[in-house]
Length: 311
Image (cartoon, rainbow, N blue to C red):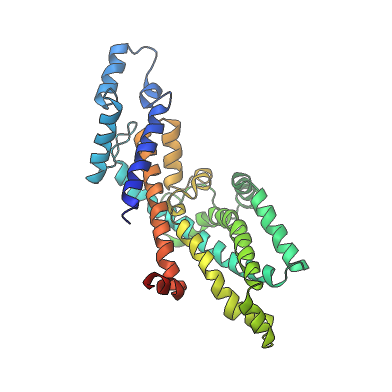
């Protein structure tokens, strides 16, 4: 936890520095040919962009410590308030999709490892390869075309129909396609990861001992291997924490889901760097917290880690 503090400062400095190195900023995007240089300079002074680099950085850091992420240079709206509305929307989409993908990956990964080299293993590996190869945006467009346009089963834009914001059925109608897109995007790599972990466990000594005691393959995988595979799964759960905020940028943008994705994409197009820096810093913070969460979950899943710590 103490290491996380200087690391966050380093990350914030890098993020701020990279944004400053960009050849253009928001002032360049809002200026018009009929503006004089004096008007442009006044705009820069108004937003504090005429200050030296370090002055701008320390002002930004000071405001963050006070809970102020700043304001959009384009819309003049509070970034913290915008994120407070959009992050829950992103979580409502990403979390169910990731949990579904994780459950599918655990089942398919264990089945593939139990049938290594057989048709079931080759089929699951082929499905995972296909899922990795298909670009997310292309798969989303295919779903939109067939299920949204041709069959007209599901809505393809937004999270609610205007006037039906409180209806669960309408929300579900908008939710299905982006949820399916993210599930297909998440589960192939998770499946391969769990299959590789389970395959490695098969060669361990405790599996040979269980076979010597005439345990069935189902007993070995359900009672022993599945428990040991939990440790690498915990790693994935911890590292998935940042995805709750920035894990669906492309999908949210395609389906116009009112989450962090369209907000960040819009800020990138308009060079609205306070929003970009706030989202990047938030994402980096979640990566560090995800690592910390993984360490904590390790000790819960595997008591041997706690015993080694005491030793």
